[in-house]
Structure formats: structure tokens, C-alpha cells
Length: 254
Image (tube, rainbow, N blue to C red):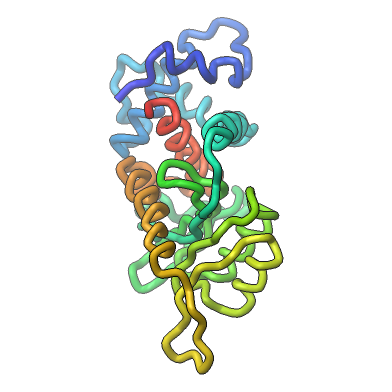
């Protein structure tokens, strides 16, 4: 897979202007990063025709840290979501294994959402999805952290519902009173099955709940990119950079 010149033109003005004697243009660097994202290879494993691997890594690191990728994502998100009416959203998380190369960084280097669970070292991706193709917001947490607390933090960061009325589809991990009340406060209508042990279970729309598969399908597409499916990056900023880059690629090619 490669990003064409026509696809790149859509986002070209969002990148910092290149100055000086630059041997690799942004499109060449983007396709090199896409190769790493797809194949899950080490930076040093980049084919020689892409150019100097360290220069490509440096530019990816810079774009992740200075917000360039976030701005491109937000721009494409607005273009995508402005054409649809959001009536349902889905909140869920997925677990990602952390490769041994992704552990061991000094804590002062930056946040590292990595935790040890029964499956070993893992990271969780939390997401509120608007459709099966596009998220509203996402974040990371250690793999041993609970879904509901991080889900509430994600909802508070998102703020009010994008439209009214808007349903929020969640599985039983989020059926606690605090999470449901927060959903109501933010303008969402929670659609979540009650725990079978509840003394006063509630009714929920089972047909509408089937649409929760959209966030599952979105996670599945993301995990088609090997650099997302397995975490090799020690710091959150770089792993989030690859995650954001994957959404940008999906928006450009579809």
C-alpha cells in the first residue's frame, strides 16, 4: 500500500514547510512510515529506496510530538463526520500485547501506558467510535487497568454528545451506575445490558445494541496494521502517533 500524490495533496498544507537541503520529501517519508506501520518492521529494517531510516524516524517523532498528526486527524475527522448524522456512538476497549522491545524505558522519558496482566505486558486502546470507519476520541491505559474508569475519563474529555439525541452503546464493563449517570449528564442515552446479578435490572434496546459491532470492526481494521496490533514503542507519544497515522491513512485511501 502507498499514498499517492493525489491523496497526499489533501493534507500537504498541514505539514511544516521543509527548509534547507532536504533529500526526502514528505510524501516519501509518509510512505516509509506506512511501510513500518503495515509490516511492523524495525526502523533499521526499512528498504534502502526509502532513504535514511533515522531521518524518517526523526520526522515521525517530530510530527507525533508537535501535534502535526493530531491536526491532520482532526481535519480529516471534520471532513468525514460533517457529512453524516451521528445518532449512535460506541464505547469499548481492546488489548494490545507489548513486545519486549517496548518495555524498559526510563519513566522520565514520558508517559508509558503499559501494565502487566495475566497475558503479560499489555496496553489498552480505549475508543468512542462514531462509525465503523471513524472514531470520535481515543486514549491509552495500562493493560491491567479497568475499562470503566478510563471510559469515564474519555467521555469527560470528549464532553457533550455530538448530536441530540445520541445513544452510547457499551458492554457490561461499563454498566456501573457512575458510568451510566455520566452518560446521561453529557447528553448521551446509554444502551448497556445490566449485570445478571442486579436486583433491579433495566430494559435496553437489543436491536440497537447490535450496532456495537461497529467499534469492534474498527478495532479489527486497526489491528491489520502490525505496528498497532503489537506495541513496539516504549513511549505513548510514539505509539499514539502510529495509531493516529493509521486513521489518517484509512481516511485517505477509503
